[in-house]
Length: 259
Image 1 (cartoon, helix red, strand yellow):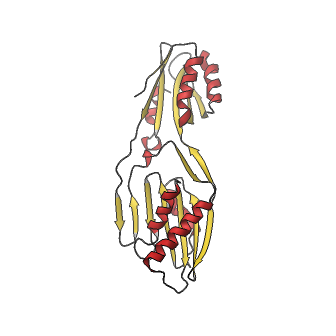
Image 2 (image 1 turned 180 degrees about the horizontal axis):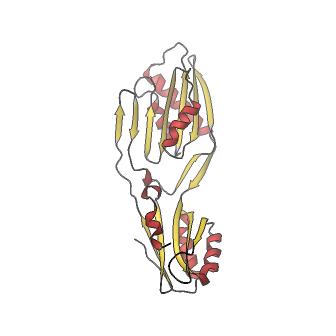
Image 3 (image 1 turned 90 degrees about the horizontal axis):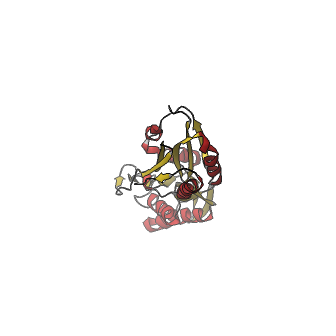
């Protein structure tokens, strides 16, 4: 396995990568940021009363806060029952599965919104345009949470709430549901790889364990005698410290290249 391993990884899967190679017993690191944010574009669809953003999902920061487990909040407003259900979705494709799991076909409306990075969608499901999906999305945005979907189910009680009343109802129950939800911080993992001589494996593995690297794999098929390829993932905020630790503890001259 050659050092070109990192370039065979699909770009859509990476926010960062770091590649290093051995030359004359020197380790060269070349981290590169592959993506930058793009402008946000709103698309409104009148037939389904939905809106979406087509921003680059890879412009997210290296850490985000999301919902730890599914949360529910219920409130009756002028005889209409509103039930908000919030949960974590890892990507946009998971949104449809979440909606299918929690929606009630017997309800009058199943309105929803989700946010994944800078991508989001919302749907009014038959309510007047902009009175349900957008307030739910605003509640998600105000919460500071990411990779979250909220579905608000309404059972009509016979009294119309009006445009302002609907906005307050949908946005209010969504916001309360998110406030009550248990949350957790998730850090993105940076894939890294390096070719290293056998006599440095002990030093390298000690540092990988110290910095809690994951998915550590080793491949001896490098085409070079006495050299192996080690790949792993580490929290984005541990990359610099790991680089410095390897440099400090390795007996060889290590040069780091960044761009």
